[in-house]
Amino acid sequence: MTKNAKILLGVGGVGVLVLALAYIFGIDRRTVLPLQPSDTQPAVVLRNRTLTVRTPTGTETLFVPDRAEIKVRTSGRVEVEVRDSGLTFQPGIGAAYDGQILLAADAKVAYWRQWGAVVGLAGTGHRFMGYGGASWTFSYERLNNTSLFVAYSTRSTVLGGVRIGF
Image (cartoon, rainbow, N blue to C red; front, side, top):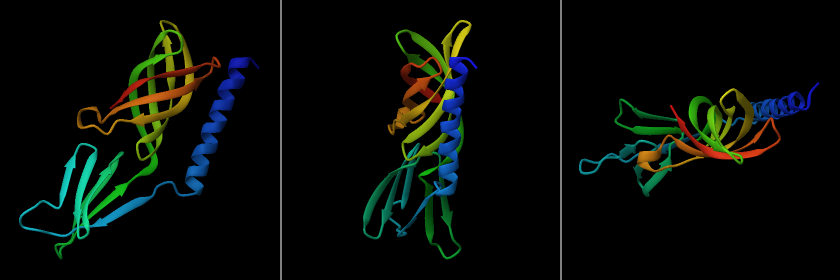
């Protein structure tokens, strides 16, 4: 078995371990916010990935990673359910750097608030390497699908970069 195959097997094993632990410990948590209806102000303002909710005790702003549900009950009660962590599949492209600029194609496979776990390929021309690492998503309105990532590659190098999810 070659050195690169051992590294790839190790990175894959760590990824499977992380996903198994996430499943066992219930990483898919939800936050439910009760809302106070009003005729003068909206109870919920959802702009891309930032959710502002007016509750009976004030205003609360949340970063919405991937999923949010707004439910209006027949009684008029409005509930906002936000999943701030869980498993996902969000493909992305971007640029990475490990001493040279590389083209990157990856997928976010898990998230916790603005943090995510990514796996992908990076390289130039015909030489590509696999990588696995962590990403951080911007919460700004215009950059809501853009992340910075740091990863460890199958060539035993650390690389960093920018990814755009779609």
